[in-house]
Amino acid sequence: MSDAALRAAADQPGEDALRETIRHRVEAAGTSFYWAMRLLPRDRRNGMYAIYAFCREVDDIADEERPVQHKLAALAAWREEIEALYDGHPTHLVARALSEPVRLYELRRKDFLAILAGMEMDARRDIRAPDLATLDLYCARVASAVGHLSVHIFGDPSNSAHAVAESLGRALQLTNILRDLAEDAARRRLYLPREILDRHGIPVTEPAAVLRHPALPAACRDVAAIAEDHFRKAGSEMEQCSRRAMRPAAVMAAIYQATLSALQRSEWRDPAKRVGVSTPMKLWLVLRHGLL
Image (cartoon, rainbow, N blue to C red; front, side):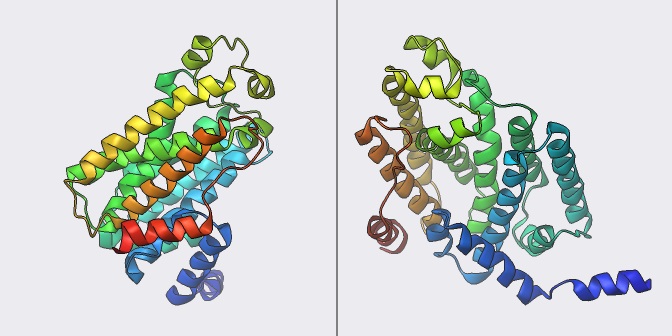
């Protein structure tokens, strides 16, 4: 090993320090997923932290205020890093944190690559009123693919668990879209589908104009109905899964269904107002769906 390689190796944190670094990143993010991840045994929890850290890394790239080619190059570098991960020699701190979960839980390479493909959809252009098929593909890549990785770490890689990942991932992402309308508009993005906007007589796709349109609540109700259907499908498939293994998924479903209900009660009168679930309610949902 060269002197430079030895110095680089010395700079790399040990495994315990690496896991602590990733854990602090996740905790600092304040994500709702943290509540579900806490239900897992330590090794599985560390695996989920690493997956979340990966998702944050690539999502931050897609959201950067940088030229498109810069963002695509950074995501391409992550594709190379995933290949290095599966070849056994990752270099990025987050990829190194993924090494053990990939080995222990047989995480699928194609799911990491699907997430990157979803981030590339955001990076290539400002998404504005995609058609329903494109929106579904986007949700499958940025959310359901995360679910496919997650069910392996949870401990139930069955077909039913993967079916939960397909439906629940879409439900969670659609709920995020309905919650983050103003935040996305500030990034010049609009994920509400073209067909639903047309159905309610919204002829524009400029995000701020759509958010001011009087028919916005009606369009959002239609998207919420799609999310509810995915929640129902996920719940049905969940009945065929290991209840103990899928407790984190049940908690996430409960928290996000409560969020969707809060959004429906708000009727999207003020899209800029943040709507969510209180900490006491989250604790109750964790107790109800994760511990009892």
